[in-house]
Length: 518
Ligand code: NG6
Ligand code: CA
Image (cartoon, rainbow, N blue to C red; front, side, top):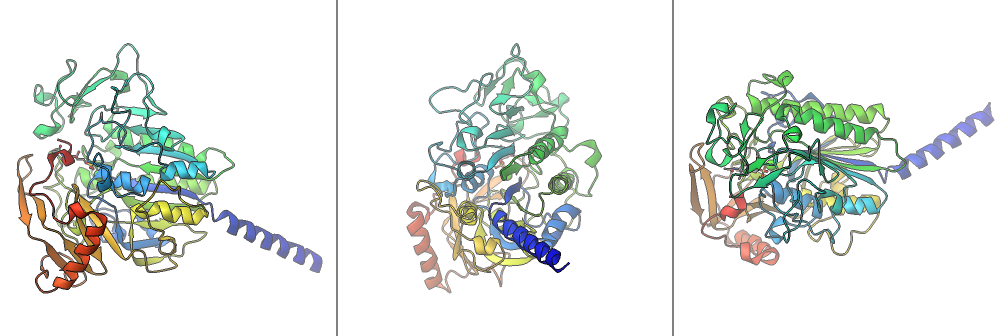
């Protein structure tokens, strides 16, 4: 009896040791929302939309209050997350058209390439928006599309080229357009109309949703897009099925039997425009399609957790839920999000949202869930998504490649809830202009902020700001400029910015339209 007990104790200790070892190479799943703001989940204060699945992850994981994406728009944020480098260092890292070349240098390993090289199976499912092909030759959409995700570290990839509101409106799996009929080749242009397909300008009567001028290119699935495409009729996606399509691919990848850990970058379309949810989610919230899209996001999170649980992997999977930039209600389509927003605060207590240097532009919901290692709680640590690279490298105990991740800081103790200290300061970018936060101080250097007056493309005023200093603990809404009272703080923060990006300490007199993809 005694012997048996000792034997089982030894076995249990052995298993624990194994578990502890295995815990250093957990599966890693980044669940990335699109335009989901700080205030959009129940666990961050939303009441108009139920997000039980995200809330459960937060309750059983670590919920961050000061986590940032690196920029207030998609391409630069994703660029930073994957490369560990500030996007403003790369002039091409601005909102890209759907036919832009790849902006990541395949010679410099991304976090995906790094994990692949260190024994992980890697996959991208969802939104890409980092370009495809090279600048020196036109991309053949009908052949093998490369370089793209596969060339920068994702062994499996299923994605759209850019955004759902940009052509080509197709899925690409491992470098090929899915369901493409070779006799109906795809052509794409952002300069001029290609083919004879109706556009939002020529055939507004065909539209399910009215769009602004910029989004009035080729009509696909009753919705006009930015840019023009022809062909690929059998390959065109249906917006209402997109969430299920991506989810199924992600779940398939999770369920694949394999002997190594995996890294899944699951980048959902929700709640980017056009917001067209599956009929079973229509009316899920009182907020209209934007709220319904958040409900879709939440449901997908639940299914991912379920798949991990079903395959016995939940315990040792590090799940991170976050978003790529702050919220926006009107972003080109009259879908009712503005009108039906009611009291909902998509950016939570923060000012501004997508495109802005106010906190709402880059302060993100951020949840870390890893039952084997991370205790539930709330963290005040200052962290940025640019830090994931170095932190994950530290986690798996491998050095970052010498030519990668130069701006990524190891904040692993904060990520795991072992420390309340992350970074000393954070850089917030919007449209290639910067702001800096250190402690509770936030400094926005002189420059131009874009203020939306209405919903049309031209209802945007650019207001020149003289250089602003806020104390976020006392003034979370960034309304009381203290620059004149605390010149030494201004000097200190300008000094840090000056070291990182001397050309950004004073922003140009107007926003570079190229940053917006125009
Ligand atoms: C902007 C689009 C906007 C959205 C955004 C990219 C106009 C007027 N606005 O240029 O609708 O597509 O680009 O969003 O065209 S992001 O989340 O991918 O950065
Ligand atoms: Ca986005």
